[in-house]
Length: 367
Ligand code: SF4
Image (cartoon, rainbow, N blue to C red; front, side):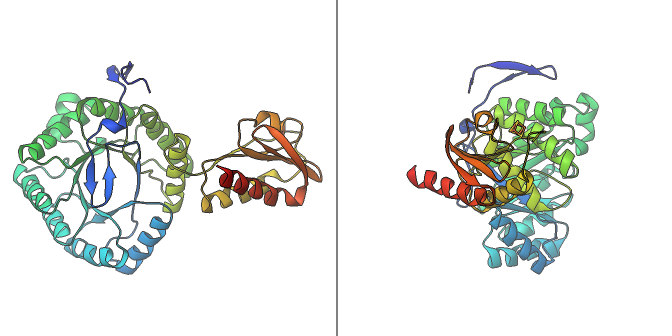
């Protein structure tokens, strides 16, 4: 990574960053920032007061790799229910607070592990100070979550809805926390506009020493949400920015976590098993999509550092995927198994999946 290179985006000169340089913030045993690892998080669909459903969600998302789970705290019942969720699951929970700082105080009493405050709707300095003091007492970090859609009026008046406005909004709140000698801070700068999200985070990474939580907000349904998140979060990850991510999709959270893991995997930040497959063409002579789906499901349960290829034909497949660690190229009645660029053997078509899995296991045990 060229740390000293500078570039211009939306008129701002940005210096490349290294995520190891951000401050390490501890959420119990989990660290955000100050390391190459990027923490995976998501948010519950149920409110905490719906205890049974929330517990079910938490357990499922933990199984899918979520390390931190955010819950929307809308009233006192939600804030108090956090204690039960923690007792039942042991999960690390973040309380998402809007408008009423007292809910943060109750959530902290209930044992929440991190607080997310939106400066756009908790305006009074003494309210922020009360939360900071309670957090300090219990070593609970705070994420200051700046959202382009809910910036303070005076900030909007001065800077418009820009990256600078988002960063200026954060500066005011960071100053309140620092004045109280509080530094366990995570920052986020979210917008539904991808270039604005990128610009705000790059600018923030240049100014603040604190770890950044990345996300494109209101990203949409699966297709747009995946593309927008990959473009926004991916660009930032590539530039060494971002310490924790949440991919937001309208729909199943399981899909969100799969997209997030795949995205991190592309940058070598998560062990997923990279599955490459050709787009197919007129040379295809077998049901490649069915085999690819089967391999994808296998890799979800058995993550690996290897790159796996499923190719459509034996004519070009092994050559086109010669950088893969292991792969198959199907054909009529039989296909080829290849390992690190070399064709190993011919395999009857119905046995391709098993042959591929066996080769993956052999490579893994040899490494
Ligand atoms: S691997 Fe074969 S089937 Fe797939 S795109 Fe290339 S030539 Fe077509």
